[in-house]
Amino acid sequence: MNKKAALLLMVLAAALSAFWWSGGFEAPRRVPVIGVIQFTANNRDTVEGFKEEMAAAGFIEGQSVLYLIPEPATSATDLETKLAALLARNPDLILASPTLAAQAAKAATAQSRIPVIFAPVNDPVSADVVTNLQQPEANLTGVRLAPSEGRRLQALLELAPQAKKVFVPYNPAEASARESLRQIEAAARALDVELAVVPIGPAPDFGINRALVPDGSGALFMPREGLVMSRFQEFRAVAEALHIPMSTPRLEQVEQGVLTGYGFIGRDIGRQAARMARQALAGIKPSGIPVETARDSLFINLDAADRIGLTIPDAFLRQARQGVVVRPGKPAP
Image 1: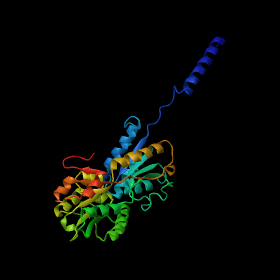
Image 2: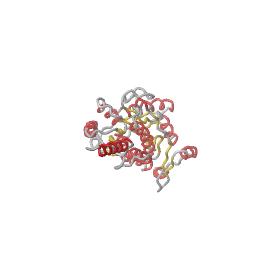
Image 3: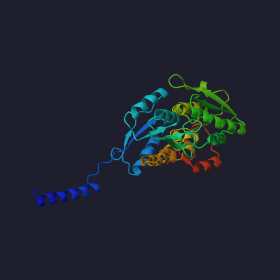
Image 4: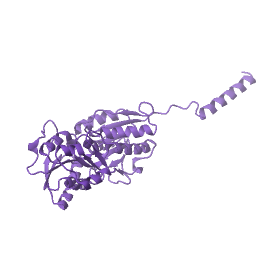
């Protein structure tokens, strides 16, 4: 090789090196993969809110982010099976909703330490999902619900001031249900009302009908728990047949016919969780992302009130206008 050719090769090599370091041959970035695990179908709106917020931040599904979303699990065993299948595909992050899914995700990721964002968990500490809300000690963080079940019981009794007994369908196997019950027991004593707590099991083994409601029940209160809330339409039918008010913690169920609620908006929780997920995808460990609290609102469905012949007190309606009022024939905003 003559000197001229050698010099040309040296110049070419230098140019290629500069092109490489300037990013001209940058290896394509790996598209992040997010696995989603749900217990019951109650939280589909939470997942949709999560995806909407991610898309608004530039994480476009199928382009700059991939989602693995199996059908919602129907039991603890089903959760374990679906989580094993998700983890076999090496996701970068898991979104778990709600409490039972978060507990299962914690156990399934104990070795891999894949970041897990839960949305929501009723009380992450009592459910043993985390022990420190400000600095979650493991690989999980997310959105918790405000400890406001007592306030929701109070709101329900504002619509049924004559009620001396409140029917509470209850899944004793679930930590979230136990936490809801703990909160309303204290409120019930202060409000001088009896709680008629009735354990229920999974469908189809457990029927929901008027015979399930204890005599003298003047209202129905659904705890924050997936199994009970997954059957809210059956409970709604029973409450309307008995002409008693019913309360749920979810706006979406008020939009679908339940009389009232005080609690969270699933889509908003999903958006909140997405902002936390982006921090985790950027490399911040869950221990550096404090658990956040969902915002509560008061909900009322005027059409449902008409169906049971209930007149809404003006004071209650004024409070609800600060949250969400579902009007007959019209969805909530």
